[in-house]
Amino acid sequence: MTKHYLSFITIVLVLLVAGCSSNNTKPDDGAMAGDEIEDGAPIDLAEDGTSSGLDEEGAVILDPLDDPASELFVRTIYFDYDSADIREDSLDTIREHGKYLSSNPDRLVRLEGHADERGTREYNLALGESRAKTVRDVLLLEGAQEAQIELVSFGEERPAVEGTDESALQLNRRVEIVY
Amino acid sequence: MILFKRKTFIFLTFVTSLIFSAQSHALLEIEITQGVESAFPIAIMPITGDAPIAATLIESVVYANLHRSGFFSIVDKQFYPQQGKIEQVDYDRWRNNGIEALLTMNVAAAGADQYRVEFELYDLVRKKRALGHGINTKKNLMRKVAHKISDVVFESITGVKGAFSTRIAYVSELREAKNNKKFILQIADADGFNPRTVYASPKQLMSPAWSPDGRRLAYVSFENERSEIFVQDLSSGTRSKLSSAPGINSAPAWSPDGSYLAMTLSSGGNPDIYIMEVGSRKLRKLTNHHGIDTEPAWSPDGRFILFTSNRSGAPQIYQIAFGGGTPKRLTFEGNYNAAPTVSADGKYVSMVHNSGQGYRIGILDLQRNTFRLLTDGNLDEGPSFAPNGSMIIYSTHHNNSTVLSAVSADGRVRQRLRLQEGKVREPAWSPFR
Image (cartoon, rainbow over all chains, first blue to last red; front, top):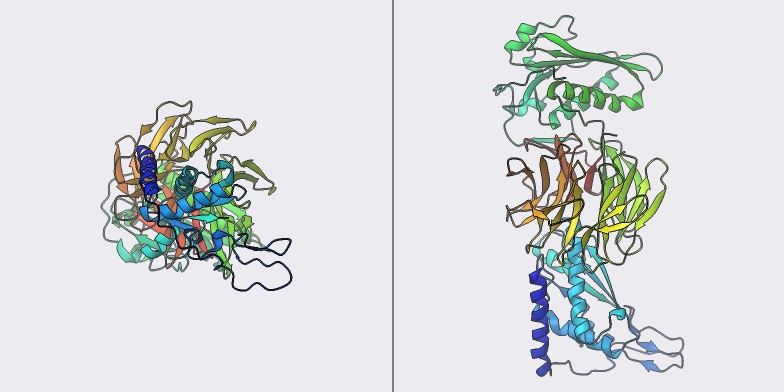
């Protein structure tokens, strides 16, 4: 498992380098997520379990998770075949989630690890967990707390898409970040 | 006792597609993958008697069983020197046609839903009746009788106990409506017939494992949105949760004496093999590596546990002593070897293998240290040895679905089992009882 260890070190190094020149955050478009806020009962602007909406006093809450232009809006991280290594193009996304969790310590997240259908089901169950763990490691490096993060693996049991071509397999090798 | 002396016998004349010409097996698709020169030539006389429906059933089941085993080449009826009901076996004429054994069967109606099935097996080389039996039975037990006949014939000729009367457990996935799936743990006869539901769930089910007495199944269920191990009694249906530690709870495997379950848990930070004492549920960590260790399988003497590990960088099969110690790597061919299943004599390990051509079922001869592929699919998975080691059942992709297939342990004969509803996978072959 030297490989895992190495990939972890790689992540740390990339983070350190990226941290020095981190000006690539998305423009703050603020209230883009919900369209209209009507009078009356609180409404949930996001349908995916985030907390934008109206609070008990009727004040509008805008959660950066709901900004479609934000990295936080990306909730699926994809992986290479039989690999739990974070791809470089996923790193910013995961880091933003880590920062968000760090500055919102009351928010909880579940990382759901998945695999494509190739290989054995039990091995893929373990592989899904490995993927969820590498995502967690990045979240922790960004200041998220272990208690905020729940890991679960579904292996190849819950494909995002059916199909056996490479595009389907790629969409199934993933970690879903569920708030 | 082996009555038949196995000889090398070149038998090419009667082979080829003729083999199945007289049979109608719409539900059973058999594929001869290699020549059957060394298979044992046997004649199965058309079954006689006055109960044609029962007769057809018995004959077709026996035929399919013996054929699927890979041990036999069933000689086409046009080459039989005697026809009809045989009063006196003309040994010389049968032997002249190169046939070594003759099976005759008769089924007679004996009252309301009462039948008498009689069968006799002749050793044509030694020119003697090898055995014969009569069985009183009912219509709904006819398949059972046919499996029993197959077992007796198989054992008499090969010296190996027949496994046709055993069962298989497997998981079916049904699509009920859009985005609405149903997962069913089922048990069926070894040929895929007579399926019955053990447990049905809207959530995923995985990895059924038979207790050695054949009375219980351990399996993985996602009914609580994570993998947990359950055990279910088959006659009462009672189920209980066996393991729900944090992280993965999966890959249950009973020890040969039934007192332990090996399983994969990741509560220690990463997936490792643990041994649970079934009575006390006390756990012992067996492997300890930061990579993935999973898919434990016991050696038949209970002294070793084989498992899949990616500690070398990719999944390979390892073996560790029951008491622990340093694991020994068993597979070196290919870049993916996983999901080991061990033959009852402990001499062979079958697994999912990939060396770039696809995921296929392979078999490793532990004594000779030789490896060979048994299948040629792209996504063949879930091998499970028959309790007599003669066949391996596995799942394979077919027509955009997943079906079960059986392959003889020598790779010579492959047969898709009766096409079940939905996607069928993760077969587990039962013990003898």
